[in-house]
Structures are given as structure tokens and as C-alpha cells.
Image (tube, rainbow over all chains, first blue to last red; front, top):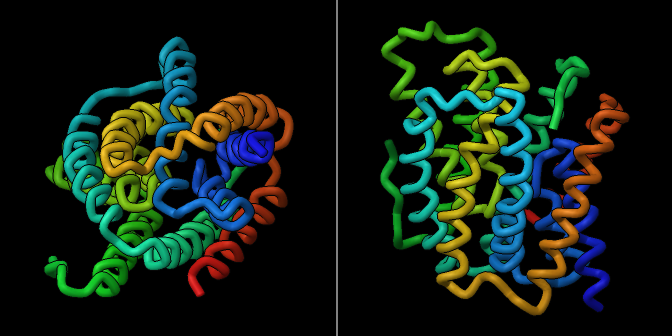
Length: 125
Length: 155
């Protein structure tokens, strides 16, 4: 049984590694194929991101691609809003959270679709 | 800024989604780089941060999709720098969000670790594959899939 979760994780990871919307497809894979609770799927997505991003970051830093000037202005407000919203999400009914996530995926998908139609093939990681 | 009505959960997620949509559409319109000394830089970064954090916290991901256009549009980074810096931005946000989720008992150890290791392995594979296949058709298929899945979840 655990193999299914590893497999879904691999699929989600590949999609994320290709840059197609990060971990956002992992969550519906978990909820739709394996019946995982929406909040728990989101939690696992967040936690899974951490070790991968550390590795990716070390590599990017070596290539001098990380520009940290002024990013504190993004990070600090984000830390506050994510903590607040993370708490709100835990109180929201799971079916409502699922539906909200679905709407989010639709909007995100449309935007990414439009963006990809204008893109050139120079993206990386 | 509209006030959140804590009395009705449906209104909350509708308002969040309205925010998401307008924030996204505005960043898509930012196809020109902002002057580096513009007084709009810091406020835009702060607003971008608030929305990114809100998305990551509420949906357990997806904030990264907003950060990249913010970095290219407001801080004038190029695509590679923006994607790399975005990871540096999302990492602490994910850490804090993950702690909040774990505090609420969100991390299920029955499958969490298995999925996590799968994701790490898949992520390395995906990043390696990226150099070989970066195809508009593939992207189109995936995003269409994303929309389909979203509709499925939303109704």
C-alpha cells in the first residue's frame, strides 16, 4: 500500500520538477486517487517541498542565480499571511477547502496555459 | 480592501479567490519591468508577499506561481534568476506553513513520509528531464489537465 503513495509522490515530484505548477498537482492526485483528506494532502505537499528546495537552492546559489536584494519585503509579509491563512484553513470544512482548491487550480491552470502560449523554451528548474 | 466576513466560510473562500484572480491578472499585465527606484517597488513586494503567503498557507502550495512574475516584474530579474530566487522566497514560507499545518495535526505519518520520499525522487527526475523535454505541447496538456482536475474538485 505504501508503494502507491511513493508512486504518487514520484509523479507529483516529476511534474513539479518540470515546472508545471509545482506541487499543486500532487494534492489532487492524493485526494482523488488515494482518498487523502485535503488538509493532510496540502500538509504533505508543503513538507515535501522543503528538502527538495534546499538542494535546489544550494545548486542555484553556486551558479549565482539567487538575488536576495529586497526579498525580505516579500518574505516577511508572506510569513505572516501564510501563518494566518494556514490556521484558517484548518478550521474550514474539508469539502469547502477542496472546492476552493479546485477553483484555485482552474484559475492557476488558465493563467499558466495563457502564459505558456507566449513562452519561449528557455525555462529551467 | 474588503473585510473578511468570518461569519460565512463560503464568503471567505470566494473573497480569497477574487484576490487571487485579480492579483494574478495584474502580475500577468506586468510585462514591463518596473524602474528600480520606483516608489512602487516596496509596496508591490509587500502586497505580493501577502498574497503569496496567503496562497501557500491556505492551499498548501501555489504561492510560487505568483512570486516569479513579482520577481521579474518588480525586481527586474531574468527568468532563471527569478525561478532560483523564488525557491529562496518560498522555502521559509513553506517552512512556516508546514509548522502551522503540523500544529493542527495535518501531517499524517501513515503516508506522509512515503509520499515525501517519492516527491524528492520525482523532483530530481523531473529537473533532470526538464533539460531534455521542454515542450509547449506538454505544458499545454498539463495545464489543461490542471483545469480539468480543478473543475472536478470544484463541483
